Image 1 (cartoon, rainbow, N blue to C red):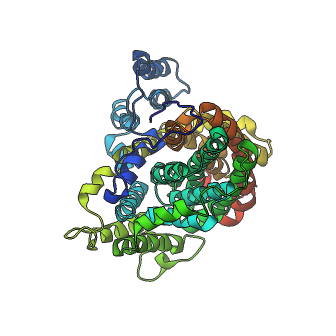
Image 2: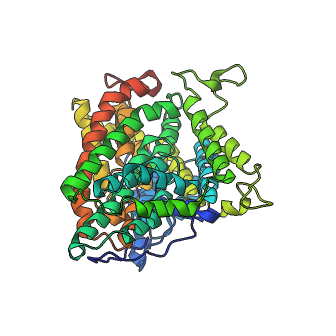
Image 3: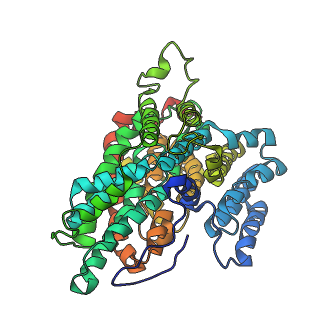
Amino acid sequence: MGEAKAELDGGPGPVPLPGDAGEGSGAAADASADERTGRRPAGGRLWRLLLGPCLFGLMLLWGPGDDPRIGRMAGVAAWMAAWWVTEAVPIPATALLPLVLMPALGIAPVKEVGPNYGRSVIFLFLGGFLLALALQASGVHRRVALWILAAVGDRPRRLVLGFMLASASLSMWISNTATVMVLLPIALSVLAACPDRGGGAGRRRFGVAVMLGVAYAADIGGMATPVGTPPNLAYVRQLTLLFPTAPAPSFGEWMLLGLPLAAAFLGGGWLLLTRVALPLGSGALLGEGDAVAALRAELGPLRRDEVMSAGMFGLTALLWMTRGSARVPGWSRLGLFEPGYVDDACVAVATALLCFLIPSRDRPGERLLEWRMAREVPWGMLLLFGGGFALASGFKSSGLSAYVGRGLAELEGVPPLAVVFLVSSVLTLLTELTSNTATTEMVLPILGAAGVALRADPRLLMLPATLSASCAFMMPVASPTQAIVFASGWVSMKDMVRAGIWFNLLGVLLVTFFFWLLAGPAMGIDAAGLPPWAGR
């Protein structure tokens, strides 16, 4: 994760980066680091390894509930939570524990646990990763980012806005971490072209604003689509896993809520960053855009590979948004398809397969996507999803979810809006110190059961929690995007905490407001009572 701290007034030079977009190495490797799924903390001590088994043993001896399976499942959850939080072993390895412990403890047979690691949403994410690799192999993502920067002008606030727009736009479709790694060398090139006036203080403030803007906007943009960030996909899958007849949101329905939320968050965040946390001047910095123009000139004319890869990605997005759902008709409900047979995973895998067929002009004799690039797919992330689904199924089958839900029934009578605000606040704070994906996987089954116990729509708790998992902005460990810009040397801990407090508060307020305003019209969520599909 590279959490080296450097407080330099003049701004550092470029940090070492993995292979750039030319060979598609950015998307996958960065995505595998996304949500810190594949990194082991330096200097890990024995207590980290022992903490999980010790908590497991305590739950077996003094676990909750009358059914012994409840205590056993609580022990498995405690073991996984301890290893996920401390990263005693790689997070994807921890995700494999249910495959061993749940059958061994008599919670569920392996033939029921194993399929959790191959569910539809995992192939949706796999298809998305492969498409992102094709985009990066062509280099079109850099062209899009520079086009946005050229469009906004070279005033400091506008440049920050340009970087934030580019970051948010890319992170809607590719991993948040890959987005930051794509934009980081562009940002460093622009900062290197900035004149050093006033002893470097103004230049450094601008550099901090650019770096934080890129990192924060990547997390904000990921909220706009169900494939934008892993917690969103975890929600979609766990909702149907916990409540099989629940109406899972389609791509278009999610965007009806997520896109306005992300747009308002991006605009409000830009104002906070450039006028409150890091006030910036209004003078031109880059000679009327000469630096950005030079970077664009280096790309040359639009190439066929860029057109084809962007076209495949656009086709995928169009098919996702028009597929339809149980509430909104779309092409998947035409007579050509059996109802319920085709979903977003089919679309993602189909278009990714097409990328393996289309010849590349930049790399003669090859295709837009070659299998060697698949080595960069974050396979550990896919295992993490499987482990989260296995954990959720164990919560339900053992009775642990119902047990915890009954304990949370004391919240009954609290106004639903207050409950949404409370859930958003708790998840925002919790994910400051833990992986947002692992945290989401842990809490969604509990919140689903709590919704049933409160006689309320479980989505009333689950969806705000999911969105709030992307709203932790104060610490480098809260998100890989923040760790990357922290390691660049431009951003100190003080800078991140000072700006992050404002973004955290804004995130909680906006998630609460937009969920309450749009969740009903977009997804049919009603706070008035328990929907029929959630009844026990």
